[in-house]
Amino acid sequence: MKLKIGIPVLMFFTWAFATGVFAQEWSSGLEFGKPRVSPAASIGVEFNNEDVNIPLRMGAFDKQNMFNVGLEFGARPRSKNVERPFDESIVLQLQERRFLFATYVEKYVLPVRISSTVRAGFMAGSSFGFEYTTKRGLTESDMSSLIAPYGGLSVGIKDGFLLSAGYRHDPIKGIISPHRVFFTFTGSLSKKNK
View (cartoon, rainbow, N blue to C red):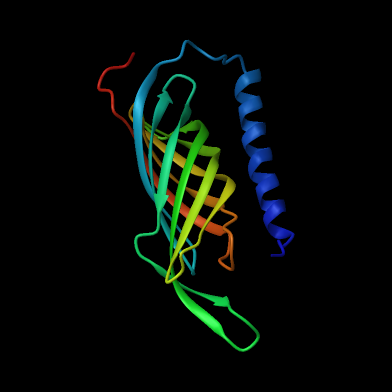
């Protein structure tokens, strides 16, 4: 599968922007404070014109330093028809299910204050894990490692609720495009600030 030059360039600028804003935040005298960690949950949707994935996440969110880490489970909401060549004249059409088991790490930088309880900015992160696929009609299944970087815009509401949207490069095995748009809602499960 060939990767077009535009995607690596887009990912480079996303990470460069994230690093630049983070460095500016760091050099302006803002240092990491004492962590205020609380449990967090996230749900979202990742999609392109060929596929949809629903990720569910549970983890720990540091409200002071705006880091989020945890475990991710993702799945297609239904089977997808895929074609697999059997020989030169026969193509099998199979129903494929896809599952993702991963850990993730995210950093949020929200420098724009919209109101006293709403801030906007961007986020960047990556998922590291395994993709597991099964095909109805075959006894074989595939498991492969996965590193999926992503980045985008984010809005923080109050203390620990985040809405994010952006681009994710999800290098899926097979013929499906790795380029996806994502929307997620992340919420702190703790009522008190610790």
